[in-house]
Length: 59
Image (cartoon, one colour):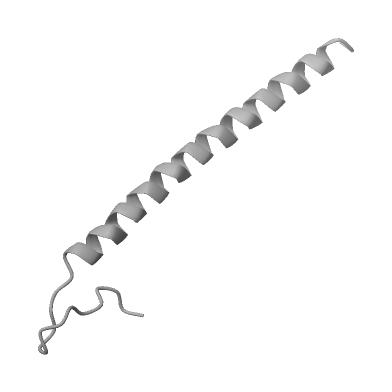
């Protein structure tokens, strides 16, 4: 029984690290997608009535 505790701790640590790694990888993909959308916004922004390019975001 007492030798089972270190094994459970190692398995728990591996599970936490795997979960964190998966979450970080998912966040990287989300960051890349947001960056692509942001860059596309500069390419396809519309011209206003004065003929100059307007902002494609609201703030």
